[in-house]
Length: 344
Image (cartoon, rainbow, N blue to C red; front, side, top):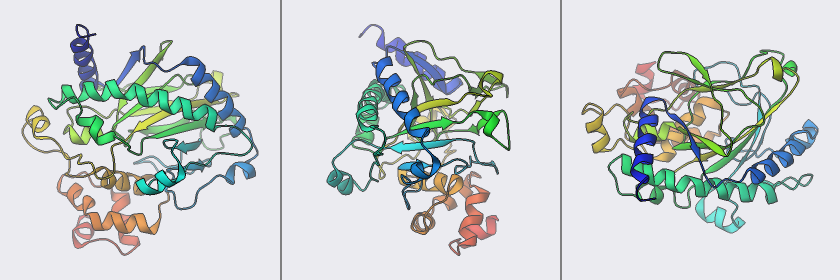
């Protein structure tokens, strides 16, 4: 309502400044829709590995289709996460995906995922609209500031399967290592088991409990970049417990992204709020995503070339935020500039 909206915006802003995570009630995301999606997803992940691997998409940079176990390594970690996942975008006609330059969704023949994932994507996407409006106002921008940037964007839904930890030969407690998300915000409906933890300002890992009929919303690196750190992209991880040694876990995340060309450079108003000096690089969405993908997964030569040509790494060097792994990868592929070589 008009009376409670300013209170909501203030509470959301305070939470995103202090922790980067918040639980939001009455999101409009149906528990039945979430449950149906988990039922169909479990049917898919229980298929034999050979069948599932038919739905990998070569050249997608892990942004569409099936990604097998131990294929994603978190930023600043050497060992891969113990999970497998599916990536979906908006459910659009094939020719529209082509026009927008997005990857294509893959729908398995063995399990009817489309009729479950499509409605869930739409409900989660609708949930994002008032949140993005509230964040825009909290940043002293027009209400449609983020809505314009995310219109017809490549916002994606990631469905993650964490196998029982007794099947993990390397680590019996960590499913997904500590990381931040690379997008604007992430919307997480309830998972099928506990395990999500966040890192507080004191360096303590805190278990997250999702209330009934609520979603967890967290800040991603793109929002942190455009707010110059005013909103905090919080580290989180997924940890198994004694109860989950023999059981698995499924989770769903809507990763809200702007369009590729959207400017995510720190705004002047957020620079003022955070000390008057830019702490994050000038960049658009595509540049930030390319840099993170080069850090975390196997990427195509075309993406690496585009990353090198964008000069985002050089701008990160200026702010002491460049990834040694990405810089070394550019060097290995003969794409490193003199500035990158000097930084190494």
